Amino acid sequence: MSKDIKNNDNATPAPVSNFLRAIIDNDQAAGKYTRDGLPNVITRFPPEPNGYLHIGHAKSICLNFGLARDYAGRCHLRFDDTNPEKEDQEYVDTIMDSVKWLGFDWNNKGEEHLHYASDYFDRLYEIAEYLIGAGLAYVDSQSAADMAANRGDFSKPGVNSPFRERAPAESLDLLRRMKAGEFKDGEHILRAKIDMASPNMNLRDPAIYRIRHAHHHRTGDKWCIYPMYDYTHPLSDAIENITHSICTLEFQDHRPFYDWIIERAAEGGFFKKPVPQQYEFARLNLTYVVTSKRKLRQLVEQNIVTGWDDPRMPTIVGIRRRGYTPESLQLFCERIGVTRSDGWIDYSTLEGCLREDLDPKAPRATAVLRPLKLIIDNFPEGENIACTAPIHPHHPELGNREFTIGKELWIEQEDFMEEPVKGYFRLFPGNKVRLRYGYVVECTGCDKDENGNVIAVHCNYFADSKSGTEGSANYKVKGNLHWVNAADALEAEVRLYDRLFTDANPDAGGKDFMALLNPNALEVVRAYVEPGLATITPDTRLQFERHGYFVADRVDSVLGKPVFNRVTTLKDSWAK
Ligand code: ATP
Ligand code: MG
Image (cartoon, rainbow, N blue to C red; front, side, top):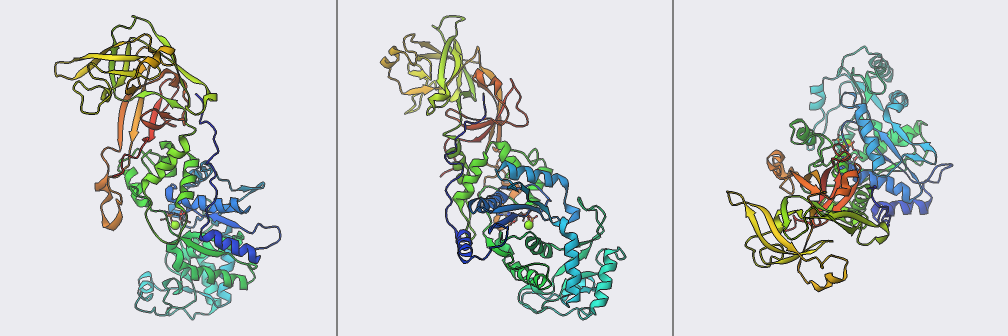
């Protein structure tokens, strides 16, 4: 069995306009970023390599790379690696992998745009020395406690540090000695000299360099001072000639410093105009999901899930293993759009995008998830008759799947009721149903164990009723059941995944998300599937008729012994 059928109908949905596209259109009309040899839209996706990417990051990736694609620009992948203690190569690798898997590439016209803030440490340091010389930065030697107390708060202006008027030459000397490793962590700090009374706390002389005697995953032990994120990020954007620097709304208050630092460095001759501009959009909040790194880590460390790539996790590696397609995530990001107001997106929107993507392209197959024996008493002993079914009902060109029907079959337990409820059309004594792609059978009764549990259902078949033959038209029945032949069915493990939380907003308003775990988020069943699935390769997606969309697990599924994950059911079972 092959991988997904290619179908690009909805792989790249037509772009819907949004406020960012309007800004770019205006900039283009005004010729704002017309520069020699550079595209006029350069965006970037700037993760910190301190964890695994999640569905919220997918929104940012699709947005940044999507704009670059649609405006014939380019998007850089940049690691904002300024916190050596928390960062690791492991995260760099998984982030690169996730971006690629989502369908994006930082290679643009043969140029690699994979960058690291740490590559700019020398330039950032040079700019820091320049700022001191220009009277725009100083080394502060207050204790951390004094610095915090003197910062003021929203209602109280800050107090100038006693070191604020230190001579530039003295600050420069101290910064060089900080760099040379003469001081311990926290002894001194380099601050921008802006305004301790600013109503914007981010402008009250923000720290721009701190001492950290820590090993960095890329620069090793070369540095013992590291630039702060708020200093590094804008300058890295400017170094890379970014045009539109798109981030989430919580950075709105950081924008004045973003502009301040780039402007000052441009005055110092470090950058040419036009310089990058920051724009904010609302982060993705998805119901039934938590995305905080701390909380995701808690789920992993407390073994609530099997790891970062557990199919119940909202990480990209988890979503991927669950069976979501990159196309469905792109469609999702396009559909939820970008706005400047916070809101919640319902989880069913994500599932809907997966169904929309897979319905036209996923091959169909049969699986009996909760098996019950069906015995056709009048079927010739030892005989197995060939049956066929289309691989996809709307793609006859894909051909058929082959399997057989015999005397003993597996059907779903729920497809038999000894005493049927009103409106039940499946198997009950005296009722006729069609076995899909096979024969019409009439139920005659069942066998039970000593506890009264049904262990086998009996029926007789009508030899002239085979699907696809002339005689089949003479049988009008309401029930149409799926089944597999016990003689050739393949046993398979099927993991029925569902939402990880029972509450739509598990971590909102101080709720304890750990108390809201869905006990039914995973049910493992021993199923019987049609024999052709013995050759299914990991990561292949399909639709099990009547059950939903599934994928052969990329970690545990092996040839001959498939393991399937349910991505989602055929219909939204959570809708009220
Ligand atoms: P941290 O708590 O470590 O800062 P983070 O989720 O902000 O975590 P980053 O690596 O800084 O992680 O994020 C990279 C980019 O992804 C940033 O530009 C950030 O704005 C964006 N991003 C993060 N979470 C979301 C979200 N829920 N929706 C949209 N974009 C997001
Ligand atoms: Mg962040």
